[in-house]
Image 1 (cartoon, rainbow, N blue to C red):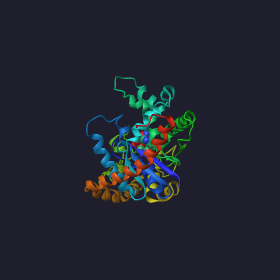
Image 2 (image 1 turned 90 degrees about the vertical axis):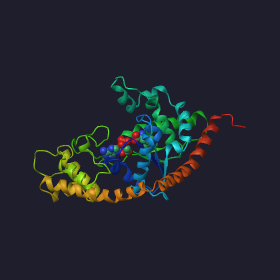
Image 3 (image 1 turned 120 degrees about the horizontal axis):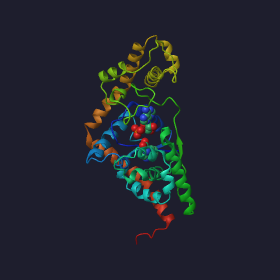
Image 4 (image 1 turned 45 degrees about the vertical axis):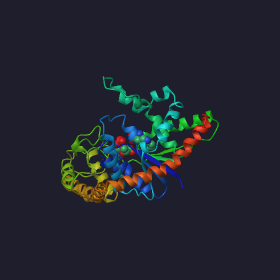
Length: 330
Ligand code: AMP
Ligand code: TRP
């Protein structure tokens, strides 16, 4: 069975784009692979600096992951900082990747391009080394990620190849990025040419997994369409309408282009998309509340996940340090 790993940062509320573009695929994939999913709290420290916030977001995200259907008896769901090998291997990765390679990473260039006086943590620069550690620790075959993460998987491969060459041992397995087909991109309801995103979107353009039905209905009612009056699936010419059709298809089933034939006006299409989203979210929200009402159980599930992760990670880390040839503690 192939090993699959993907991780998500506890850096804010989870939205419909995260669910349809990532989490739902993790749930579907857990039965076809040996799945590992990390809540990467160390990564979140790059952008979240208020004390206490990361922990609170971590427990909420854990509840979301189980609520959407990751089964703790099937997939390994763990918190990155609970498995110390991530931070430890990250240093070995930092010494295997070059300053030049890290400087060329798009995410680093984009986030520092503005110049300005904002505090730029060194962790923003070395972030890919930590991500490489996440991936390589688990002998990962496939990394299901969005397009924006492809470069991070590529640099992970480069690091793995270099490490294996340098230390004369096949320590690390080379991972492949698995990027879902187009269509897994949920666009902002207010600005349908940009992707739904917690960093760029206005609140009214984002559907959160926690939004109550009335909020979902209101956001869809106000969704931006266009001034024509025909329902067609055409992402380039009609981004708003096509996004509604994509969301309807993703939540209610069917093919977006075929579904267009069921509607002559925008109002009913918006209502149908809203209903499909509400029906998708309701059971998730019910399970989320149950999980959040039993923190002891949630902590137990994360302990079990961390233990399973630790068994694999500690073995890989041992292999790596042995290959480097550190003096073993006597
Ligand atoms: P982020 O919230 O950007 O950290 O993304 C977490 C995961 O959700 C990544 O795998 C992204 O590729 C995915 N994702 C984020 N926004 C969207 C979106 N609007 N449509 C589809 N997938 C998304
Ligand atoms: N960098 C990823 C993101 O921002 C999160 C992440 C960290 C990740 N480690 C990973 C994703 C390992 C896949 C595999 O979305």
